[in-house]
Amino acid sequence: MIKKSIDDLNEMEYIVTQQNGTEPPFQNEYWDHFEKGIYVDKVSGKPLFTSEEKFDSNCGWPSFSKAISDDEIIELVDKSHGMVRTEVRSDSANSHLGHVFNDGPKETGGLRYCINSAAVQFIPYDKLEELGYSHVIGHFKS
Image 1 (spheres, rainbow, N blue to C red):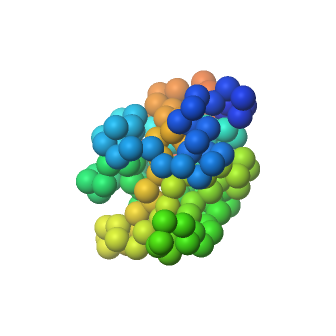
Image 2: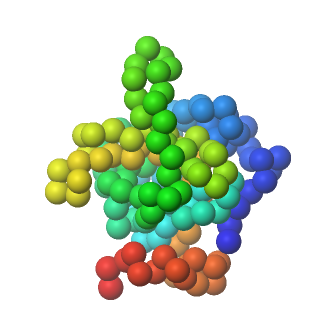
């Protein structure tokens, strides 16, 4: 399982996950990344999203239509910056991940999980077994 201690996070990872920050749009690692695999919480290593649910929302951050499991996602009301939004946090590490909006693809449920690249780590599909994530292989179409 891939994970980092809070002390090993770089500055942007720490600002995003521990201080509810946001990285710049279109200037982050996964906004335009579409390789087959999963995205895990950078701190806990818990699986959050698969590439099967990733889509190009043209917002500048990775976007997903649903999480692997609702058990690892916490949704909270966020009234910062003069807006009312739904914040998304990881349950195991309490990491700030991003926000969820109701403007995603209708055919997949209408949600858009807008996630900071700095909060997640990508695990390629062909490394899932080797890195201890074989339990999520069933979430992929053959």
